[in-house]
Length: 416
Image 1 (cartoon, rainbow, N blue to C red):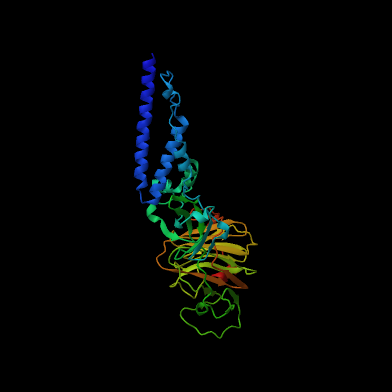
Image 2 (image 1 turned 90 degrees about the vertical axis):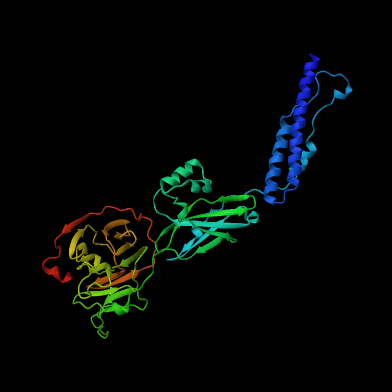
């Protein structure tokens, strides 16, 4: 019985010695490691193994004492453990946080600001961004890099927060906690992720959605009707019967009772939003047109223009001389226009009440220009705006429109 017990303890001793030999060999091998990151990671692993060994190892005191040599027999790793605990470990930085309230945008740039708790241990940042498509193009690589919980990942995937990895743009080696991205599409939503990096690894911020503003524009004096007066800032047009000094050109609106003006841009891509303040005007038409649209008639009367129009108490949308009545409160004083050229849509909104009024489905074949026509009073243009949050484009909303052969009868014929 004594021999069996002693043999078992000898076997335990041999096992501990073998493990110690392997650990010492690994430690000697690590001492020759020149790569700092790999050295620190391996040293950390050895430290954990030593800690586990000292915490769980048995004190090998023989149950059967043959002589004094067996009275105090144990493995002591306390000195090695203390040395390893004294190493200065470098860990991956905490995820940075994008500060949406500090981020700014123009029609083609977005400046992203972020903060980090481990600013002094971070060697650089990496900015990743892509267009928000609203589709669930979720892939494993984005799942791996996002470092999100399974619940959060499922939520983000359901709202289409991730696109294919091929569509992500990457800006590496950023040393500051902000960066301005140039060359973006106007009126477009983007997803941004910031990665904090040091020698031990990296961690990503939560994805954040930001959007560019619309392309700013002014009224073009060269295309303005002779009986319209344009303000010095180019944003307001007013009927002025005495303004007859302008020379006639083919580009200028020239119709009788058709006092038209156009913006100084032609749009052939992206999303653009602007608003028009009608003030007290009760006869107007607001929309877009090709450059080839006739200048001697109301816009919307031909196949090259699309408009939202008011003629006294009637509100209609018109294209190619076909009209539909729109239920709009008479007190409408501001009209929002969203042109989504890439998705072939032109939409009109009541921004004061967050209401969708109508959407045209248009297969654009040429660049289009914002176009405005009035019969009385004045209009003011507000361009370069971000699309309001209540507009969830490119998703469509229903509107209450009634087709009409011609709602303008009797005394309203002048609106044509």
